[in-house]
Length: 194
Image 1 (tube, rainbow, N blue to C red):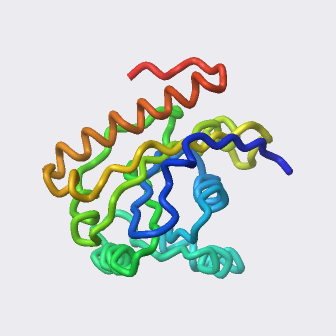
Image 2: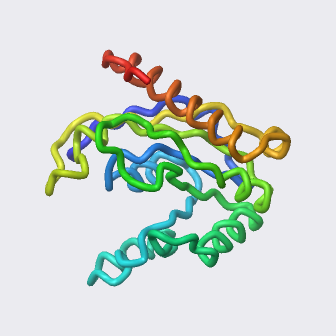
Image 3: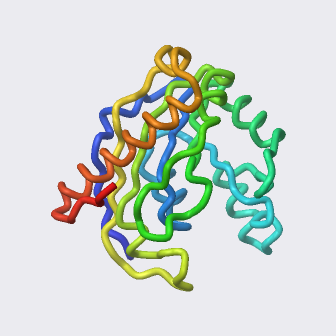
């Protein structure tokens, strides 16, 4: 009702198998658009305090969200993600760990390669663009607009196993930024300067 959604690269999303969807994080709307456009069930991590909010906690639990403690290395949450991947599920994570302040993709922190290797999961690079304009972190309510979701080519687990965590994080940062700018150009927007 409020958003026009454009999807690019859906042909890059396998229909089954263990997949880690790694996406930029523009808005609180991101999980909604990740979950709606992918044709298979996805699991998410959400800040544990959100599960304590009346009704909202039950809502996010019903859409396959799992709690994670912010500010610490939550080993229980990481084990939960790895378990879901080993079971052949798709999990969507936001490696920036927090919402953007300007719409751009921050340099990703290493560590996701380890999750891929332990869960034997390939990666689908995923970019959301337009959610920042519709509901940035400093606004209390959203504005209607166009949100694009763009999927890059799968990064196979064999390639990830050959890379160190730092090299994988750098490659993924560059991949997401490239996908974002291609997505923006398709919509007639100015690409970001990185």
